[in-house]
Length: 315
Image (cartoon, rainbow, N blue to C red; front, side, top):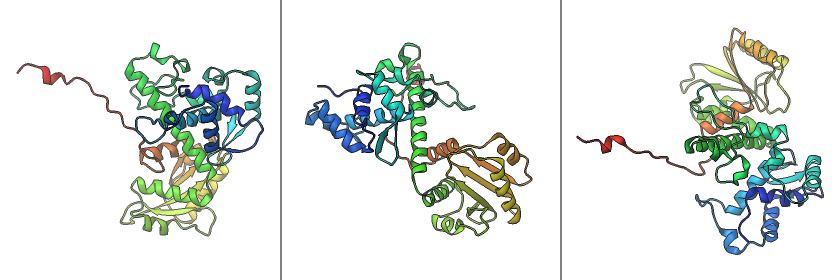
């Protein structure tokens, strides 16, 4: 039979997790290939970039969508486990699970809704999904120009990547997060070399500063860091503690980085300080990692060309 689309894979994938055990994705992939009776050629067929097989790519997207809708969790990297919501979904849908069903969950809607910036020149269509998938996902081709559809697909891919980055960061050890913060600062042009930054960001003894990094290669000024890999919201007391530590070091610049977000009171307190304090939440951290190439790699490049009208003008 032909290689199934990712929505067709959703229910069989979830059903394999019905017993509640944690299963490795690679094992599920093999079982799905067997269940759909794929030939060796179909199993080896690759996406255009050649980096991954079509089936493995679609299994990965099926897992991502089920995870974002709360039907399964990723307790450990490369593993899956069903949730109570997932068990109910299997009972509600004895034949098929797809995006239409998943859209009843606020988490899934939030995942599919583009997070626009003030500098955006074009608004992506909410719920556009991933280009090349089953047309029943959103029907964007009926309401958008090709350029808008491409922008919407790109936005959806970027949001998925950002979400996956945060999930991966939260699963790593604290030391990994501290090194990641250093790598992001380095990629942005702070701290000189990795060796210099490594020495500059050793944990301090006062408990309020997680690291120190040079603002430039000459070390003319220092930036003091606080890195919190948290799930809950960072409140005003945490910012006050960091501000007190900065004052004790007679520091003028601080950066507080978290994988979660900040309360309104925390943001207001930081904005009213005499010293300069920048708050970076999880979404902003993921955006910086993508922008400066930390922990990500280029999977595919598309070049969109247009007619060069000057070429066709008469002299």
